[in-house]
Image 1 (cartoon, rainbow, N blue to C red):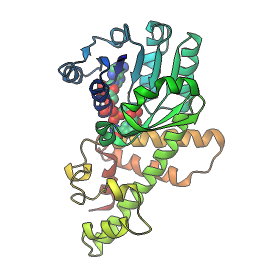
Image 2: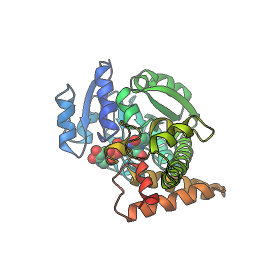
Image 3: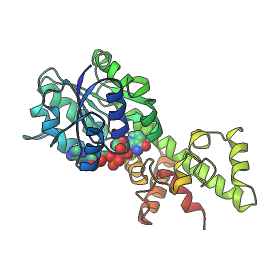
Length: 294
Ligand code: NAD
């Protein structure tokens, strides 16, 4: 049993924290949204009144926040959380953020003698609930071995991507590919349906053919094709389109920094920006389907 502070109880953080409770760990939880804190307090966590309160007595600190600015403002600066964390503690930063932001927090943590890993995840809200997330970890390999039992309570695949920030690099590459696959799937679904095919029939043919991909296997963007997918509940409750646009922006930054050519990633970002401009940013990212239908 480990004493863990968990900060950020949104779509992902809440089910991840719940799995740690189920594995018998002792949790102090905090989110700016009080109802999420209350929900976990009712399941046995200690409701902390602030992030600083949550980390009191914690051996491991986990954060799952929206974006780089939230993570930097939580940890860094004179009054940042790093200054409140006890020596010898381990920080697992699981949000998807810019690799350079992760490296900044790594450096500041190292200056204070704190161990840290960037450990972004893949697998969506379903993977978070089932405890089957994939972790892409950047940082010291020995620190990862220390963290492995905690990560294993939330995920089933744990990869060491490389040194500080490498987990985030792997994550933005993966999400750029995911966006491209989702957009291509949505476009093909709309094309087939406009030409008279039944959505379920077309989805099944493509799933078993050479166009098969993760979106067709697990997350079809056409409403009604997969009862459990966000598309079948009006695109609610999954991975928000605005977060996908953020990740595609991070991929473009990484491409810029190395003069890499990423035309598909650039186009994917532009299409997600269009969706956001239509006021659909809070919907699941599979709502990109809406760009291709009347
Ligand atoms: P979310 O917006 O649902 O949750 C973020 C939570 O952080 C919110 O509850 C918010 O109130 C809280 N928060 C923000 N600032 C805070 C602060 N200073 N202190 C305490 N709480 C604070 O987002 P999410 O979908 O849970 O995603 C979290 C991260 O995981 C993002 O970086 C996202 O890109 C990544 N991610 C999401 C998915 C997914 O399917 N949703 C999948 C993989 C990775």
